[in-house]
Image 1 (cartoon, rainbow, N blue to C red):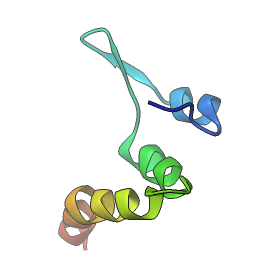
Image 2: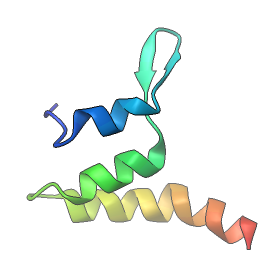
Image 3: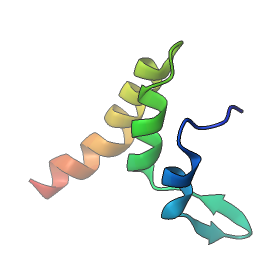
Length: 59
């Protein structure tokens, strides 16, 4: 785990699910994309597996 660069932005829209803090997938996607080592790769996986199916069904 690492500290998010702007933690208040992640948890501003947080909800609690079974006692766990849960953040919006769009915020996670934005935050991982800025990570210097594998952020772009992680963001691409989120885009392909989570965001693309949602966006393609809405078109």
